[in-house]
Structure formats: structure tokens, C-alpha cells
Image 1 (cartoon, rainbow, N blue to C red):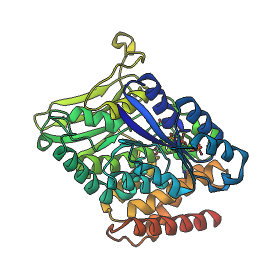
Image 2 (cartoon, rainbow, N blue to C red):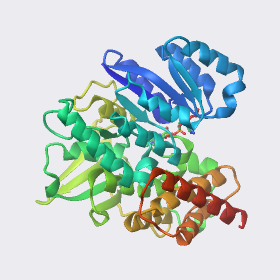
Image 3 (cartoon, rainbow, N blue to C red):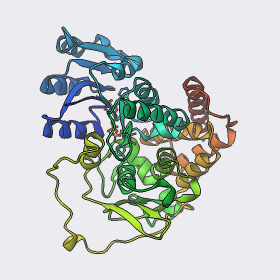
Length: 403
Ligand SMILES: NC(=O)c1ccc[n+]([C@@H]2O[C@H](COP(=O)([O-])OP(=O)(O)OC[C@H]3O[C@@H](n4cnc5c(N)ncnc54)[C@H](OP(=O)(O)O)[C@@H]3O)[C@@H](O)[C@H]2O)c1
């Protein structure tokens, strides 16, 4: 039995993780849940699954009636906390083996860091953790891998599995790399759907509304990642994520638009062979793989019917129109604290766009302005990154207010 903590349980990835846990109740036990604001949803999940360790990110909910009901659910052996620290504290529970980090944004960094520091497996949806803090997270993951090998907890062959990506592209690359020698990898190909505005010009993007940008063609996701997918910032974040996860230099990570989203990513080898990962567009498959590794478990998903798939298209991304991809790649290549500042500016600009306080094209412009103003330092600590994040958010808010 693998015992899991789900951070962000009320969100898109969180609810799909619980679907996987329900389906494999003989193999997965949910021991803790954390949400941000949807305390009623958290309570319903806790009651249904019998979970007694609970945390609510929004500390203002502590005086609400739902807090009493959550406390009743946690009575006895359980625990209930409010605020960011209470969410991060769940990862250290002695009864937990795996932490699914499905929080959104840089707010997930501390939980990723603490999970690995506690020697647990990190099943990571929160890509911002690696974008912002990859320089801190990857050495910790290597330590946990070594501990798992020493304790006989790692599989006999293949990666030790301390850090399992949930992002479908990275899960795909992870699987394409199994059984291969990393020195023979020539290039990682990260696929992109191209988002809902593929083929549009910059002029056509000027009047885009939040409702239009939230309608993703192939995936149903949370609001922030949906906007990031439409601007191609999501792909930029994924390039940085791939760089850290697979130790690959940026000049050997390419993005290709594959509008059908049937190919989840590819690995090209030094002999010219390319391994591609295909599958139905259902996030429960990569979530389940991150939890089942090194095994594969059955999944009642619609199998891909190749006779009905039709043609697969491929194209280069239009980084002139969708500038966020180029900005994120530039931030990754420069490294240090620049991806942290870039990510924070993007979070603020996306929130402003969703609140109709900023424009669609303003997202990339705001990110660029904050990146230009940032004095890059080498990454040293979590506290330093939190300070850079706060500085970049303030700078981004000033920029938006001045428009
Ligand atoms: N959705 C996808 O298909 C997908 C695919 C690949 C990667 N990802 C990545 O997975 C992460 C989650 O995405 P999502 O689409 O699932 O987002 P989402 O639907 O917006 O869900 C976010 C979850 O995090 C919780 N949360 C937010 N802030 C919190 C805080 N300060 N403290 C505690 N909980 C907090 C939310 O709680 P409340 O709702 O209760 O406030 C919610 O449960 C992102 O990093 C995203 O890039 C998502």
C-alpha cells in the first residue's frame, strides 16, 4: 500500500488524483489532503475517503462554520491546520510515502522542497517548483534517490523514482528514457497543442478576453495553466522543467506544435532513432504512472484508436506572436534567480488579465519588463527565492498599474 498526501486536492489535478486513488483503493491510501479556499469540497473529500489530516491554505477560513466540521473530521488521531505553513507541514507526516504536489504557482515551492527534505517521493504537477527552485530541488531529489537505493526501496533497474513528473510531457519523456543510456540522448522534443489561438496574429490577440483564453482545445485544466497554455508560457515553463528534471542543456530541448495532442513528447537518440509517447488525452494516465512507478496498473481510459486518429500535424511554435515561450526560454538559459522573477511576473500578469485589470498582450510585456529590471543572482536558498518572488510581484503590479 502506498500512502499519499494530496496538496491541491480540490483542483483539476487534485480531483483526478483522487479518481486514481478510488480506482486503486487496494494500492493507494490517501492520508492527508490540502486545499486553498474550497473548504467545503475538502470536507466532502475527507469524509468520503476517511482522511483525517487536513490543511486549508486560506487562513481566513479558520473562523467559518466549515472549520468546525473539518475539526470534527480530524478529531482523534488526525490534524487540522490553516495557512501556508499548515499545508507544508502535511508533507512531513510519518505515515506518508508520496506527496502529490498539485498546488498552483510558486506557492508550491516550499512544499516540494520540504517533501524531499523529509525523504519522501515527490509526485510533481506543480511545475513552478522546478522553474523557480530547480537548482535547490534537483540536488535534494538526488539525495532521496540515493537513500531509496541504499534502503532497497528503489526498483532494481531504472530511476530510483524520488521525483516523479505528473506533467504529461515530462511523464512521456520519463517513459521514453526508461532502459536507455542518458549519454545517448541527442534531444528532447516537448510537444505543444499550440493553444486556442494557434495561427492568430498579434493584432488578433489584442482584444482576447479571459473566457476565450480559458477554452483550451484538448485539455480541461485550472485557470492559471489554461491561460499559460494559450500564451505558450506553459510550454516555456515546461522547457525549464525538462532542463532540470532530465539534466538537459537548453540547446537540446526543442518545442514542436502537435495540435492533436496525441504525441505527449519524444526523445531523439544519437543514432537518429526517436521514441515517442502516445496516448489518450487524459491526465489520470500520467498521474497514475507517477504513483504506480515502477509498475503499470490498469486504467479504464478510452484507448487510442489509431485507425481513427487520422493525420498528425507538426509545426514550429510561433515565438514572434507568442513571446512568453521565448521569454521563459531566455530566463532558463540565463538561469540563477531570473526564472523566479519571470514566473512571479507571469503569475501577477495572468491574475490581472483574469480579473480584467490587464490585457492579454500585457502578460508578455509585463514579464519582459520585470525580467529586464531584475538583477540576477545565483540561487542560494529558499528564503532568497521567496524574496525575489516578492520583489518581482511588486514590480509587476507597479507595471500593470502604470498601463
Ligand atoms: N490541470 C492540468 O491538467 C495540469 C496538467 C499539467 C500540470 N499541471 C500543473 O499542476 C498544478 C495544478 O494545476 P491545476 O490545473 O490542478 O490547478 P487548479 O485547478 O487551479 O487547482 C489548484 C489547487 O491548489 C489549491 N491551492 C491554490 N493555492 C493554494 C494555497 N495557497 N494553499 C493550499 N492550496 C492551494 C487550490 O485550492 P482551492 O481551489 O480550494 O482554492 C486547488 O486545490 C499547476 O502547477 C499546473 O501547472 C496541471
